[in-house]
Length: 238
Image (cartoon, rainbow, N blue to C red; front, side, top):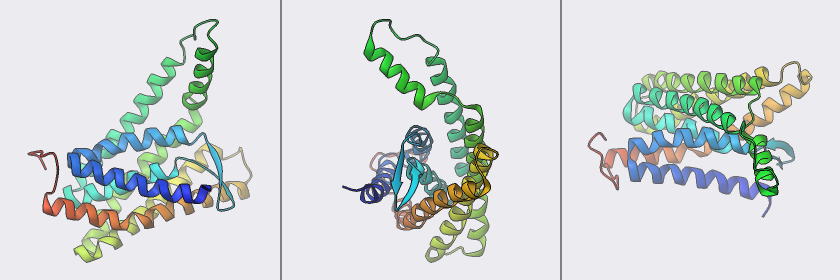
């Protein structure tokens, strides 16, 4: 199976896991997905692939699903709950980064080749590079808070259920442009030439744009779940 088919399969799998989490655990199933998505994105991003003729990194799909989460939370529970999820994701990014970098300070067992190999692999994934870490955290906070703000801005203008796709797409697509631009500028400005920076930004954003367009039916699905209260595990707070 080629990378393109796997990429689309990954999109569907991510969205279905989100819906399953919502059906099982209600609001907290959605909030739970935020730390899952940002942590997995930072693990997957170390793997580079060719996709649609472009060089790309993994992690774009699972990270982009965090915008689907905040849109469903915004629609069903309001701005306060969506912003709470954003801060939970920010906290989880810091916690995982700090705790894993403490873990890397331990010396692997001498003479154990497997322990040495796993230590090196873990170091590759979790070793702290201050500029990249700062870029990731800044891009996350700015783009996610914009997404919540923009969703409610457009909801005031397009409030009906039929217009949900408008506020979902307008908020998410702009927010993902902010995320890509901020990350690329902070992480790579001065490292790559301007034309390379723009190419990295463009390819990253195009992939996130596709995910944003594909998540629209799942926003409506999330709305239907909330309206029908069809949660499998009941929570009195839902």
